[in-house]
Structure formats: C-alpha cells, structure tokens
Image 1 (tube, one colour):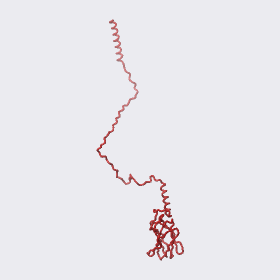
Image 2 (image 1 turned 135 degrees about the horizontal axis):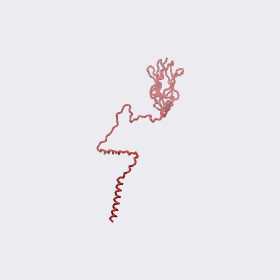
Image 3 (image 1 turned 45 degrees about the vertical axis):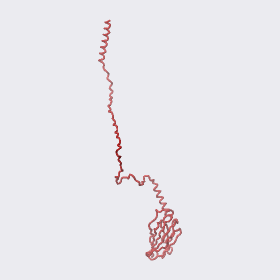
Image 4 (image 1 turned 180 degrees about the vertical axis):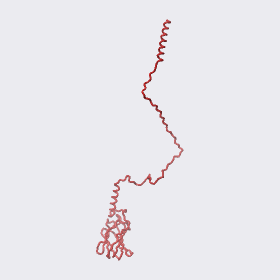
Length: 233
C-alpha cells in the first residue's frame, strides 16, 4: 500500500515540475502596429459668465441728446418736405392747374386774389393835334361789378371826369378837352369785381374818329391806376 501512495505522489511531483517549466518560458504576442496614433485633445473649459446683482440704491444715469452739431451735418429731425416720395407728374399737374386758373381769372371767370396786379400801369405817351379825345371803356370779362374813376390832370390841377363808372359789356364814353402841352389821364380801379380783380378795355379816338390806342388793364387791385400822357402839339 505504501508503494502505491509513493507512486501517486511521484506522479504529482513530476506533473507540477513540468507545468512550472512551461509557464516560465511563456511569452505574450504583441498587438499589430497599424501606424495610426491617437491625438491627445486638451479638454476645453468654458468660463461661466459673471452675474452681477443690480444695485437698487444707485440712481440711473440720464443721457441727453448730443448738441454738438456741425455745419453740413444732416438734421436728425426735419419737418422740411423733401422730394423723395413726390410723384413727378404732380409738378406738371400743378403747373397746368395754375395756368388754367390764371386764364380764368384774366377773363373774369374766377375770383382769385393771388394774381392781382398791385402796381400802376403806364400806357405811354400819345402825341396829337386834336383838341378833344374820346375814351371808350367797357368790362372785357364777365360783368361782375367793376367800378372806375377817370381823372384828368392839367397844369397841376386834377379834374374828375367820371366817378363810380360802372363797366358793362357795352362801351361807355369819357370825353377829354386837351390843353396845350401835357395832359395826364388816370383811370383808377375803385374796387375788385365779384369774380376777381378789376378788368377793363379802352379805345382812344381823336376828333376825326381815328383810333389812337386800344388796350386793356388786367386784374387790378383796388386803387391801382391806368396812366396816359397826351401831348397836344
């Protein structure tokens, strides 16, 4: 029996020695080198924003608009009308309307004081050998109540030939007896007509019925005069 146990123990000893011999000579197989190296990435750190609590006891700052304007700088607030959004056709329309309105006023068909003539009008000098002249006058536009006064000035003396003469469609005569030398005639507008300024036409004839001058006064304001100078030769 002892021999059997001895034989078993020898078998275990031999087996253990062989395992130790093989284990000491074992080498691990290294991994395959692919040539790809991993990059080291530094970690990114994000700074958190600083949050400041508002100071409830600090008075807020008030900022006034700057007054340092320079010549040539554009005005920040302008009430001047510009042509940025103006229709080009408006200018043509306005000119056309103005022309039509002026024509209506000139013909006594519309009342508009924007075209009133406020200055006396001289019709020049007329030389004649005639002793007398006849001035024939009428309203050349619509009959709207125009009144005139006719005055002759001779040797620095004024004489009223007709006062509050109502102008109508038919001709009315004013007779003048001329003196030697200078004779001045004034036809004064006493009012404006109901449809505009005072308008009238005149025709000047000598003793023989020759027409010396014909013309008109246009849209006169009250007090404006038509002036004539006659020289009797």
